[in-house]
Amino acid sequence: MQVFQEFRESVKRGCLVRPGDKILVAYSGGPDSTALVQLFLDLRREWCIEIALAHFNHRLRRTAERDERFVRRAAERWVLPLYVKKQNVRAFARRRRLNLEEAGRELRYDFLKRTAAKIGANKIATGHTMNDQAETVLMRLLRGAGSHGLAGIPPMVDGAIIRPLLGIERRELEKYLRKENLSFCRDESNQDRRFLRNRVRLGLIPFLQKDYDPAIVRSLSRLATITQAEDDFLDKVTREKCRRLILHKGTARLLDIGRVFSLPAALARRCVRQYLRELKGDLRGISYHDVDALLGLGDGKDFPLKKGLVLSRTGGFISIKEKTIPKLRYQYLWDGRGVLPVREIDARFRGKRIKKAKIRGYRFGDAARCYCDADKLDFPLLVRSRLDGDRYRPLGSPGRKKLKEILRAKRIPVRDRDKHPVFLSGGKIVWVLGLPVAEEFKLAAQTKIVFALSLL
Image (cartoon, rainbow, N blue to C red; front, side, top):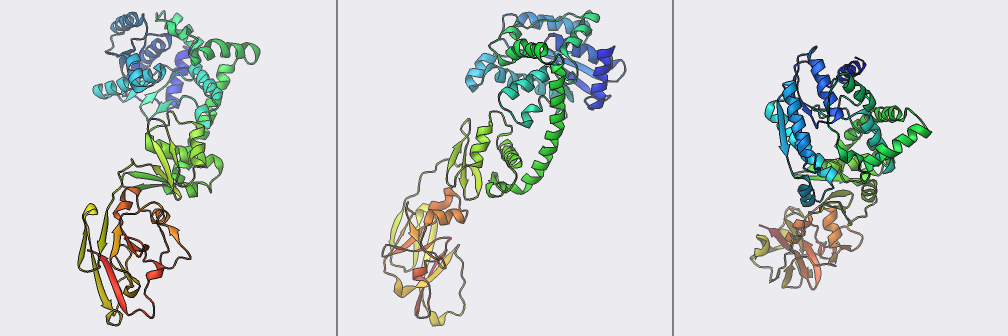
């Protein structure tokens, strides 16, 4: 009864299951999932719960069909509904460029979630044990994980996926199976030392138990439990910080990297991770080096993440780099009279000469109009799309600046910058739509004739 008591206490303490729940148990036919099913059946004697089984056939082993037949017979003995799916994991892994473990996990959980939704199950239970937790912590430690990685396997995910056996060692479960006289399958791939988890399970943990700590599995499990609580707290702090650091503009998300730098290093890294989680939906494939590279990304530089996602820093913000858009190229000579249509950007401009003395009030607005000294202009004006290397001195500026940098500072998206035509006189920039008039052509006390240029 000791295993059942531990199981029941774990379920109650973690609020993993409540009376009235319908639970879909991921059942492979192995010892852990077999014990899990029987423990739920024992719990059903005390609580009003429904149980259904789901088996995913990965088609990776010769014995996969044998395991499926075993699972079907077991479901009949228990009188439980069973849902089975077969899928070619190897082919899926090749198509998606994943390793077999990642591909199998993705397909298996997709099947479990879809099945749970179809049958109305509000919980999905998996047979992860304390040994799985210890193995996971060691594997992540070997890879140089931070606190989030060392938190290991969570007992519950999204309030739906539960791991009620994380507090029980595998050897206790095997004693329970013998006592209940329950048969199960053995997965021969668990002996394949090509997989890191198997090397940890078969080699590293026995070595640590023998030469360092016989209770290493429990020690590592305790480490995961402690770290989970601390990680949850830090995650909460991070989410609160990120409300001000991650900006939403339409469908775009921008990270205020300038303000991130003012945070302590540990919190800064977490904010970058939170930003990447929001962009990707998860942090799979994201490494410490990726986070560090983004923290050190220079202005105007790009950083390619995996699977084609490229991030770019513009000013103090990091965002997804937009796909390269073909540059607009146009050029017109304009005498400044009447209306100039610029067909490439679907815009029209009007020029008008006005005696300064007749103007009672100026309606300034860089976004749509400018006023300049007509006597300083040489006509015809050249009106064209921007070019690399364009420079001018905006009104009030201490010196000339690159047009590219001015547009960036105004936060004009790259895709829209060619829609801001450049007006030139004698080879010098007079005005750029959306920016101030050039200092050289501004109105002065001696100005007699004003040239008013406006977007219609």
